[in-house]
Image: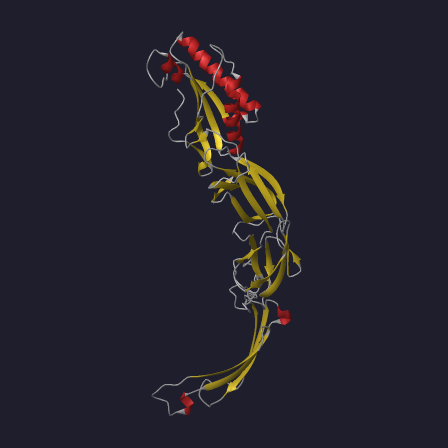
Length: 406
């Protein structure tokens, strides 16, 4: 049997129950037939021969059959191929680039069907836990990028960089999702010895010292020795009744550098919200010309501003006594504060850290029409408007207690 040829054998007969035992009443015939579809076309040729199998009435001695037919061929749709998932990774073989290797599903190129090496991200910190930058490193003979693919196992790595000790480590990689490896790379150090001395060269007890403008603590004997990261190092010291002093030195690995800071005595103090002059700024009468006797005091203010970079903005306020015309006094106080600002700028203070505001006779400290009251009310004040050591979210915070300009 095929789609273009076939044979058949048919047996047909009839009988009644009442005449079941009578052979003459039960004719039976056998027919052998065949068919073909010439050329597998739509024409069908059928034929057959038959003969009686019993002597029943109606069964022919012989029968010949022949027929021609037209039967259009019905074309069957091709069977859908069965697509397998040979590696059981959830991706069928027709879209799986690696049908014999299961995908590792590590959140990295999981749709290609191929297992990838583990994605490793490297992060380097110094011994203080701070980011170590400017490094070169090699892992498994690959020049270091911040992220790379590595097979599972232990991979040696070397790290070098200016100012850091050459470091060797091992990247331990396990198969699976991306991982981060944190490696400590110690920075190189040298020794700094800081001494705070007075004009006679004697150490100042309980002086405080600073490193790169950051307070580091007290020096009970006026001296401290400590390990410091190599490079450009700014060392400072300050004490009650003295101006802050500082020096910048170059420190190399293994070196010992002694920094002696000669602190100058002063009555000027940096408070939370103002700079207390401990004295007065004098001007020529009814003029904005600063008297030479005030230069030393203003030089100390300039030194404070340069040694205290945390003082981001300082307002110079000028006041007069109550004598004279109100408008003249207002203008005079403004010109005098501008003169002080100009003087400080000439001494190296950045202009954007200073603002000037004259108030005339509108803000007296005391009342009275006498020399003592007038002298007290004639003054120049320095108020700290912003300072970075009181920062919030990286933005300088206005100092509480500082008067607001009117």
